[in-house]
Length: 151
Image 1 (spheres, rainbow, N blue to C red):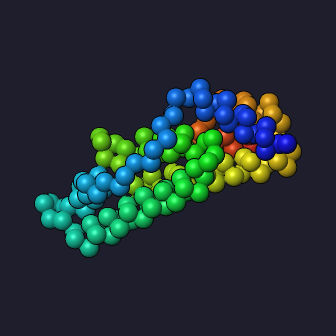
Image 2 (cartoon, rainbow, N blue to C red):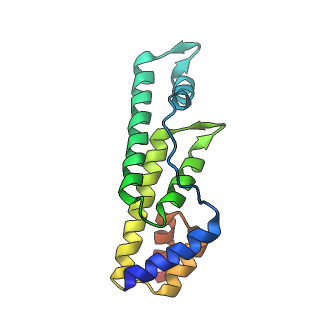
């Protein structure tokens, strides 16, 4: 029953936030290419080893984000988290896929924490609504808000 209530709260807030797009972006290697070249070029010389490492980490971050998305694609909140994470880690048209994957994981873990605490009866519907209204889709911040309410 509590899981149904939590899902209802998430649906209400997700439908009012405007994060809606449901498609997962394709990996575009030109995006991390610019980021990695900028980061690992010093005085006009590219550190090839660090550039390759940076590109690998970006590919791994994308794959992590995609894996999380596929795992939770039937939930009401995953598209909002994906869109938030993608927007947050895209600067000047270039997505840092390493950090995109990190953010997706952070918000997934935040959701699981909120869900667990709620199903354990540690927070009321009103507390969940208050923090969700302020922080959705940042589940790590929703959890932080809920903990602050208890202090």
